Length: 272
Ligand SMILES: NC(=O)c1ccc[n+]([C@@H]2O[C@H](COP(=O)([O-])OP(=O)(O)OC[C@H]3O[C@@H](n4cnc5c(N)ncnc54)[C@H](O)[C@@H]3O)[C@@H](O)[C@H]2O)c1
Image (cartoon, rainbow, N blue to C red; front, top):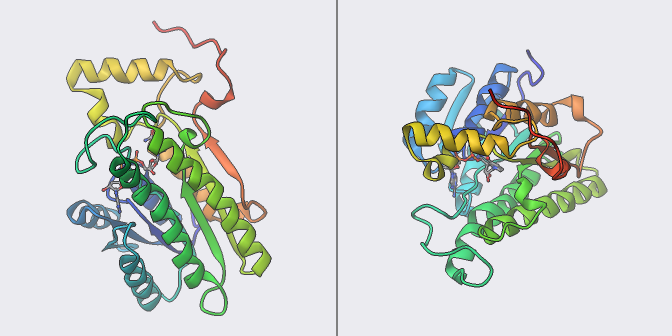
């Protein structure tokens, strides 16, 4: 409790999934959390459920004007910004993303750009505007947490744009970290690399009912720890990176994947 007492936090893509879990966890630690998303109804519902420490704003991470407006509102209403969680992300597999393959041979340029606009341009814009808000004397430094993916560290043949965009997030986080260190802004920036975390992002790939349970079980078998991750587990890591407990960590990439990236020869735990 109180590890983020009175910190002002903005989370993108906070209406559901990992973003919502981060918003909940940070409010529980005493932060004042601004939930943002494209999904107005979901965002409003989530903020209401978290309670008085939470508020919400519409923010399409692809739109620079939205970032300018959001930063002005947060600094105007809450005095400053201490933490930004660049969480919003898409796979490119579901509408309104352009339909079609996502492999390196047949993906359309439109589909490629669509995924990068949210996953990479959105993170670039978030970092840019957060630096402006957090740097002294307007701000007092802070922590930027960029949600990348294990897919930013390995190739994904049939989700090439997703993997490329997440690799971009991984690298850009280091540029931001070094730039802010060089400038003496007191702003840290790190990337988080989850894999197989059970959120609504997976719904289109899991099916319904018994088929869904089977698919979740099968995905879990691919993970050395033998199960999919929970959004709350990612949120715990994000709270750590947002808090002073990580004051000497910047430009780092933290993997949270049940062991997936550790190698390919682990024995999976037996199933009853
Ligand atoms: N779930 C996983 O297994 C997993 C693994 C690795 C990385 N990630 C990353 O974690 C992040 C969160 O994933 P999730 O599983 O919670 O996804 P999710 O689909 O459940 O939630 C994503 C949220 O982002 C919002 N969003 C999408 N485009 C937006 C935009 N342009 N502007 C603002 N908000 C937008 C959506 O409305 C949604 O509320 C993503 O960046 C994702 O790539 C997830």
